[in-house]
Image 1 (cartoon, rainbow, N blue to C red):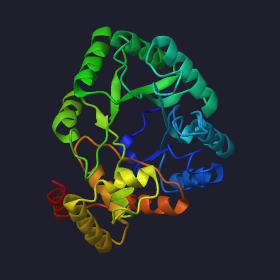
Image 2 (image 1 turned 90 degrees about the horizontal axis):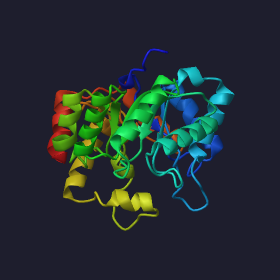
Image 3 (image 1 turned 90 degrees about the vertical axis):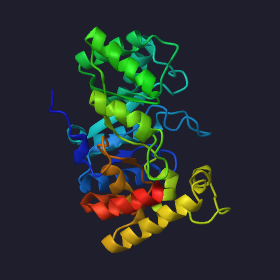
Image 4 (image 1 turned 135 degrees about the vertical axis):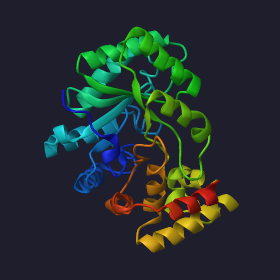
Length: 308
């Protein structure tokens, strides 16, 4: 088995939720190419992307990533993550579901293994022992390299880790949680202490607060999409304070507001790398600038003060 990928080595994790949805195949390939050229290797997708969108059924993102890897012949260079548990028809974590969903994901991705396999959401109706034993078997079979979780409460994550330990099974090593400059709880007070205690790392999603932390949304009432309306909810006094500091730091460092937002997140305890998606090559350029950006103590303190 290849040496485990250093999750902190990427400028950020490239989220594949837009592939096959707001980014067509050509745009998706361009973003993926640009990400690799910038030194990124970690591509994050899911079988359920974007089954909730009218006209889509899920699996589209995996198929695009799979065709891209096949055309570029770069599978061995990519740290590939996908997920199980939210796709209609495969929306639980029973053993049979996990196995069937993984086989379907492998077919779409055109590979014989995934490097990081997520329980995309908790399934309280399936015994954790059944779920974790099945994940362990997939690791032993070489179809999955490492395990991860998303959508678990701290109590349930602890229980899952205890269950794996009791069974002598592979455990979750990575946790995805909603965390960014304007959404700091419950991660900081409830999740991070558990991750630190148990030796897990975080790969936060909604790293840019659904676009708000790119600086794109600064006035209410102008939202044209569900995503932008979600971003607008941060347009309060606190959100405007954060944007003002981000503007100052972006100007001082000669980078985008988005790059500063990701750099702050990357510096937070237990965070290996943020997850962020780009619909176009132009958006990607704003994000990859975070690769060469290191925020000083005063920069971090200013952002903490504005967002606290």
